[in-house]
Amino acid sequence: MFTSLRSRLWLSYAFIITIALSIVAIVLLVFLLRNPLASREIQQRLRTAQSLIVATPQKFIDNPNSLEEITQTYNVRTLVFNSARQLVFDSNSNAPPLPFPRRNLLGRNVQTARDANGEAWLYTFKRLSRDRILVIAAPRPRVPALNIFTDQLLLPIVEGGLIAFLFSLVLAFALSRWVADPLQRVVVAAQNYPEGSEAMKPISPRGPHEVQDLTRAFNSMVARVESTQKSQREFVADVSHELKTPLTSIQGFAQAILDNTADTPEARKQAAQIIYDEAGRMHRMALNLLDLARLEAGTADLKMSPVDMSALLHNIVEKFTRQAQKAEVALQLSIPENLPSFIGDGDRLAQVFTNLVDNALKFTPANGQVTLSAVYAGAELEISITDTGIGIPDEALPRLFDRFYQADPSRAGGETAAGRRGAGLGLAIAQEIVQAHNGRISVRSEVGRGTTFVIHLPLAA
Image (cartoon, rainbow, N blue to C red):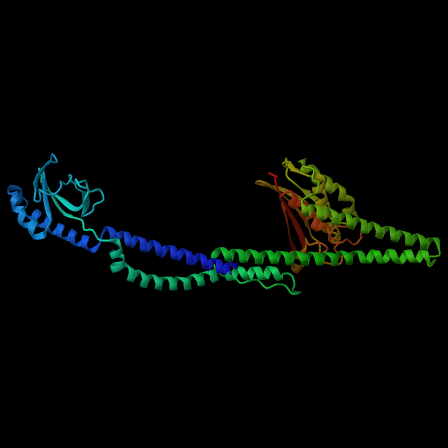
């Protein structure tokens, strides 16, 4: 019966409410037992008698017998103690003696004491002078607890408790739905996902703050899953598309060799060369994909050691000097003296700079310029590759580091000087390598004026 979260919450609230009402009833009963109506009447008589005596204390100090009138009028017992706690006067000397009044630490108007026979008395005391202490006392009434409960407590508790209990049940039901319904929506959505072909709509956060946080976390998780699935579908489509062209070329020229369409040595050599080149292209793509997967998973083997960044950048420039001269592009290096060393994988960083400089040279027209520069900015190195080439459109910049994305059909994104068309993996790999060094890479570009890639490498890495 009570298997759902809503019913169990409702039952819990009802149980708590019942316990609370029971505690209230017990507290009221105890209060009435300790302070019934008769006791309150006696306390009023004690305070009245005390106020009359305290109003003219000297009269009663000089003649204690004058206390008899007030004692009889208010039906109380009057006692006077001296500073040595000795009884000086007792209006009811035949009654069992009462002890000297205790210090009123709780500030009560009326306190309780027991006489020599163990009977309870209500009393109040006041100092009349430096040597006289007045005590006004009366026996505490005995009222049966059952009579108190039935006469004074039963009907109000039954009426008020019934109203409070019914109202509490309604409130508990509303609270249980407020908490359980949003959780139930999350459970239903999780059970039905991903049955629908369309993307799941986000669940509206409702209920308590913690439940809303859970709903937002669930929505965020679903969004990440859908984004990952979309990325995987796009990745499979991109890989299939990139492999289709070389496979078609390999298959076509292999068929030409088999059916003797390529019937001359030159034709067979050309077919074999194309098959070799396309197979090499597929091999490089497979290696790049494997490299990218390892970098993204954090399992790439990075050999960290001190890297002389100045020497590394000089080697990159020397490597591309001949290619720059052939393209009639000025390749410059601008770095300060005593550039600090960097802890990283020198070969991987060289792979990043090689890719960026190669792209800059390929997309910079003759008489243009490519500059490789580095500056020491506080706790990090900033290495920039700037060209005066054709630039990149603004709409292409956000996706420039995506796998297989190419801003322009002529942009290789990773293939080098031979002029072959790349697969669009170079910049994605470069970004992963930089991030593996706890760095970041950014790009800014203007069509027709050039592009700048900036790599930030923290020295603390």
